[in-house]
Amino acid sequence: MKTDIPIPDTRNSKLETHSASAAWMNRGKRTLMNTYARQPMVLMRGQGVRLWDLDGKEYLDFLAGIAVCNLGHAHPAITEAVCRQVQDLVHVSNLYHTIPQIKLAERLVELSFADRVFFCNSGAEANEGAIKLCRRYSWQKFGPDRYKIICAANSFHGRTLATLSATGQEKFWQGFAPLLPGFVFVPFNDPAALEAAIDNQTCGVLLEPVQGEGGVKIPTADYFPEVRNLCDKHNLLLILDEIQVGLGRTGRLFAHEHFGITPDIMTLAKGLANGLPIGALLVTEEVAAGFVPGTHASTFGGGPVVTAAALTVLEILAQPDFLAEVKAKGEYFLNGLRQLQPRHRFIQEVRGLGLILGIEIDGDGVPLVDSCREKGALINCTQGNVLRFLPPLVVSREEIDRFLAILDDVLP
Ligand SMILES: Cc1ncc(COP(=O)(O)O)c(C=O)c1O
Image 1 (cartoon, rainbow, N blue to C red):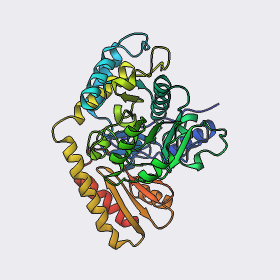
Image 2: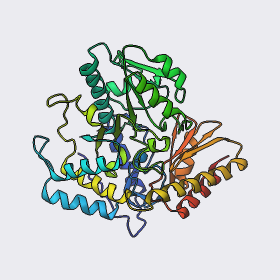
Image 3: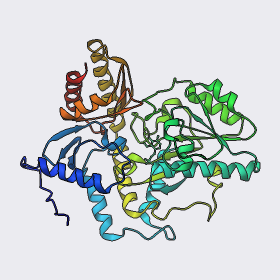
Image 4: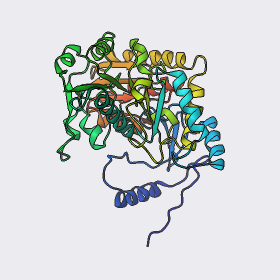
């Protein structure tokens, strides 16, 4: 029989719970499927940019649940919106209208290029919907022969079979063949390669404005205008996956605003409800006609609680100066990282746009993730050698300084 291990309240005291952490981790290892390389810690509580584990140890969270808790942990306005909504209505399905969902769609339309919105529950589900919509719109308008979507090498679009097929990283494909046909890969930030890949079966282009999982790769300023022109010239839909870098992460509400273009379809998820599961498909009126009743659906999509939370997130992001502060803090952080570079020859390149930043290092990044954690900072590593920093957008300059001091300490 399992004995229940008490979860102590770590708010006020450092409790002697080291053995409790190990016991919980062992229980997790026995029963959860083995799909994640989890860090050896049990997280209990968060406040702003700080997290505490079961042992009462405090961490600076420079990952924000992988660009999700953009307004920090336990934001009081979001907590209040969620608690209020839970008391009224949690779920009724999309067979009925609910007011938070309609208000959120209206707000997203006001703030973006889009005319219409479809809600789902995750990033992969949003991209899955975008792929379906792109094919169906093309089928309706141009007939059955166009179905190919051009994607980028090193992209990441999710783990469902279709989004995996659209993800340009072979390491994620192993053992899942046959993948869905119709995805073509070209190097990111190379418009000539993209043009060469277009043929009379192509119906769309799917790209991240900045590649996050691909190693914080920021395209040159002329790339997206050229991609937009190619899409217009060949009647292709441009789908932008803003799941990681949308919603203020780069210092603009949507990352494509940096490049002076708009997509036909944009996918959002991660930060939209600051940690509650939500995904969204934002589209123009014309493209929205590709779906009609019965062609796409989601039982939980856009439920009252997550949409109430997301409305509050958008209210905060739309406050005057919020995004200007993200931009300024991003520049401050980038400068701080650049100042570390001459002191640590190990750093090969420093990259960043707003508050998605990374340093490419000469070697394996995983031990440095561990050293940062031991010193009280949470980060992660992509592509084996890129340390990625995604702090909540509410991070302060003082917290950035504290983090830079930890990094300075752990970098060889
Ligand atoms: C750019 C991008 N697209 C899609 C996804 C998949 O999102 P989810 O894990 O919510 O399915 C991710 C997740 O990291 C992402 O970064």
